[in-house]
Amino acid sequence: FLAVSGLLLTLPLMPLIALIIKLDSSGPIIFKQIRVGKNGKEFLAMKLRSMTNDAEKNGAQWAIKNDPRITRFGKFMRKTRLDEIPQLINVLKGEMSLIGPRPERPEFVKMLSQEIPFYQERLMIKPGLTGWAQLLGPSYGGSKEESLEKLKYDLYYIKNRSLLLDLSII
Image (cartoon, rainbow, N blue to C red; front, side, top):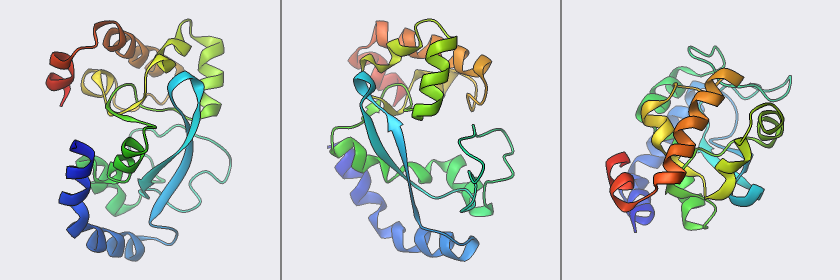
């Protein structure tokens, strides 16, 4: 219900957002990327493109604070979370939930699972649009250290999952 409501509420904004993305930089409006979901199942996550079209020409990279690959309008979309709107489709498809650990890329899941104990535990539930780690953890998780810090919040959420906790996150 919330995913459908969110899509319907933002639908009138989509043509304007699409136009601004196109005027701001070249490339597709929707950015698709493989992410890891529940039980390690991969899915195609969708976002409004907030980075330059060649942002990962040298391979997978973590986003960092003040990332130079982010477009001018992309900065605004990230601050307001408008770039996440297409992920509501992933929620409708059952690949994501509204609340849960953010889905990570397979390259990073593989690396972090080898380096951080219990990292795979975050894959026990569906990933979410937002979560406990997004509220209280480091902004980006752009390093092994920040990923470990976010994992602590993700594991807390998994252990204490409840309607009350979900409502407090929303």
